[in-house]
Length: 350
Image (cartoon, rainbow, N blue to C red):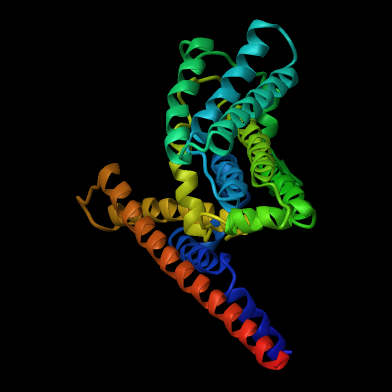
């Protein structure tokens, strides 16, 4: 049994998610120690962690298929605001059900995703430059549709989002759970094989009969759906509309994805997005509670939010650096393993 556990651990250690998982567990233990187990695992704290951070988690999960397929979209943050704006304005101005507003917001997310795919995969513009320009286009549309923050959704919607099923399980956690189940299914289809092939080497994938442009189109559509869900979660969380909120989610989700172990092209998994986001959220919580304890323990000691952000950002940078170095080592070990296996087959063939 111990031998089986050791082999399973060795296999997991070679996966892209291992470093992100290690960082997540490390900061999770720190958070439990600083907050105390009773407070950290309380139903109220668990619900608060999920309800406030599900939009970021979903945004990172939406970035996953793009990174695996060899592209990205840093405008994904402002697209959350577009879903929020469209959902609230359709409900407010057209007098329809909020469900219709959510559907229109989802369609808006898909339209923007198609446009970004066209720029990146069809016109072959650099993904970073194209998506950066798209930020200003989407921001302008958002302000045109909703000039200033306004609107309010019915109480039943945001109260449901903030409720706990069975007294403990956060309702908001259903959003990423549904995405994980859908992703688990997709990875067992032809798309699941093709996306890694295209991300790893588009030319070889094309030579093998896989259309990289079509595969990336599918990746952008999946990103659009998950971004739509993230925008709906953001709307339920804030209970109102704001044309400029969520823009920072673009770079934060990219950072979380890389910290979790996702690489640019054919490397990573959805688990990387989960662990990376968990690390990002918990390290900020840990730093906040740590400085709160110091303030109580040391008379006269005060610290501004600037120093808290500085400390958490430095730790995030170190985690990012560790993940990148580890990923390079893992990829090199994997490449050497393939080379040795190929040479061994040649010797056996002789």
